[in-house]
Length: 252
Image 1 (cartoon, rainbow, N blue to C red):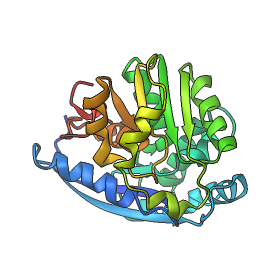
Image 2 (cartoon, helix red, strand yellow):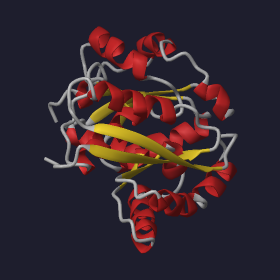
Image 3 (spheres, one colour):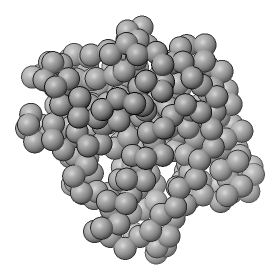
Image 4 (cartoon, rainbow, N blue to C red):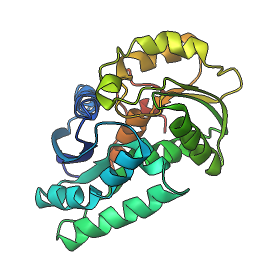
């Protein structure tokens, strides 16, 4: 385990994202109730208001600047907080993005592990041994279809998906997380090993994850919990976060 006790968490976020700067610190703060490490949080922003292919591409092209800015602060890990911007591009793009952003930070003299929310979800599902998942996403149907195809290209079958078809990113961020309790009853997760309650780091879900998991009796994750899990792994820290679902139970 790491000998450090204080860490700087960097995040690259869409300019209209208001959730990752609340849910990510909330999970690390929960961890602080059971572990000694302490964290500070630092963000750089890419312009994006509407969740459309055009704006996602333009936004993603700005991520290198954000990685350089965060490396100026000598953060210990950098999270790329937009799943669909990665999954809307070609298959396997999370690896290319993470490698490129890592090179930017290293060339700036402050190397740091890069965790994309897209890669974090894929890697975490593999860690959990999930062969089949059900997915809830706020995106328009064509973008949700791309997310489903991306996940399936990584060897994980999507048994069912629910697209809320919300294009306005601020509207996504304003949703009541507890509305996901009812949505989890609407998506067919009967054959799934894991329910992805929010395949979007902007759609709030943290308050619902443990509730839904207790109700359906199977593991429940989100893009945000997967991102925290992979950040903790990259920092060589225990992965226990109270009341944040199976992935952050400390089991993995």
